[in-house]
View 1 (cartoon, rainbow, N blue to C red):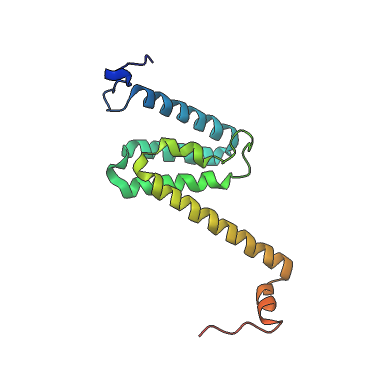
View 2: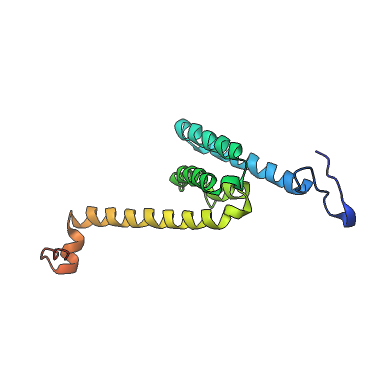
Length: 154
């Protein structure tokens, strides 16, 4: 499209109230995100992501905040599965940072917190699994309680 210039050299606002340059950067971000997920996601996950994106578009942004946030979180759970599986040289932060510019800013904090908690939960799960493999079924209890059975909870 043609970049329009408003007073003082600032980008002119379009009908939606956003600047032409913001719209162009959003389109570029969407194109990069789409290319990355097409290259990296399994077909079933790709179909699920497409459905979630269409659902988010149909919701039209922050109008129904709770539903929009739920759909965004569902989509992010799929993207997080691919951390470490996508091209780290091209997408060093994984797929989630490519998705963030596509969200309305009002959701950035809530989604960021969700991502941090989800990643922490996955890391704890991996550590627990490593302990189970290394120490056996009740290995952590053996280490903590010197081979005795862990005390029963009150």
